[in-house]
Length: 475
Image (tube, rainbow, N blue to C red; front, side, top):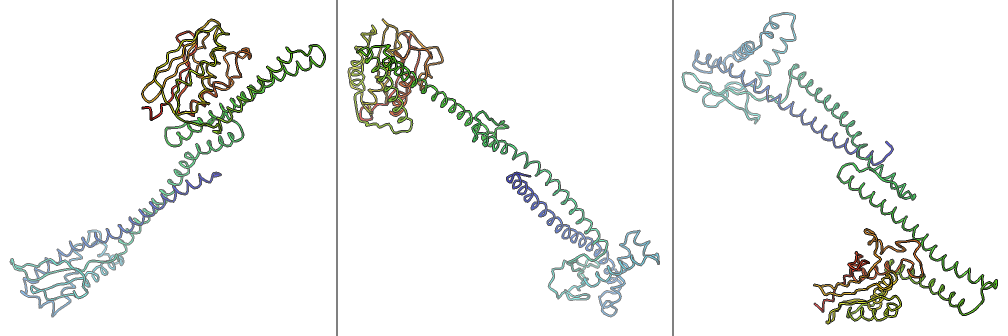
């Protein structure tokens, strides 16, 4: 696998599975040894019950345990008879066949092992047969004759397996468990490989898309599969790529528009100067005024660009303090009275009598009101109306500036605050600006923690609504 993260995921899954499988294998093998040994000891306890019956019969015939002390071989014979009776029919048949030495040897070893571990105590718990001095815990069962306890019979539990068939059975079980563990590891490896590739595939797609995005391919997108963390990451990447694509388009459009805006006054200046040089146009006051107007227009565009750039990088200075927003707006209205008269526009206001104190920069807010009012005058038909209202609300002030026709198409109001945006590309630049005024206005309002929006006006034109927070001292 080429991807290092895919390899790490695969190895991590395989290691975790391997640890679990190996741990289970060791536990199962230990449990087989322990469980089978307990099973063997339970079988021997059942055999001990048979031997206990024969000892009770022998005691009944002699009324004491002296026969075991005088003839220790008696216990051996009783054990041998008991083991023979407990042998399965197949084992008994094989014991009778002289050629089957292995079965006889098995029986002999079983007899010796049983005899060495057997313990017999009398009614006073004194040893009659066997040794109980090794400190092991032995479970004794009482021997009763005619309702009277005459002794106690016990057997030391086996601590290991010694018979061949037992060892063979345990070995087979362990081998089977080992094979199962190997198969589980192989299956886990296959599943881990598939799962690692499946988990890493979205990351690989994101890595490739990120590389393409770094190379400038902003139209790249990645598929979104599921609603988990990887799906959310894919959604966020697509959103980022879309935002970068829009930003790149806006940057290119901005550069093209700025070039166009700068080229127009420069072309006019160049043409008029060439006309003056060639003598086509006389150098009089009218020509000088025309050149001066183009220089002013070019200087205004450069200044707007400068102001907008400062606002974008947060370097536009604000000297904020408490001020009366009503008084500031009235001053801005007084400055545009000559322009209203030239445009034959009627102004009506609805302003509160009391002061409305806000915390802001008087110069920047004056620039804000001036830009909006000049934009309104420039795009309102002659003989139209202009209404300005101010209303004090809870913790904020609402300022509305609305005009009469013409309006703007529905759905385009929000784009009015985009830099260099015009409803008509062919609009006369003598009446309209470069399309930067409202963009600067939005930055000024946002710097004052306010909101500016454009809406259809009841007068048939455009409504500019500004909401600014009031000063805490005025609440």
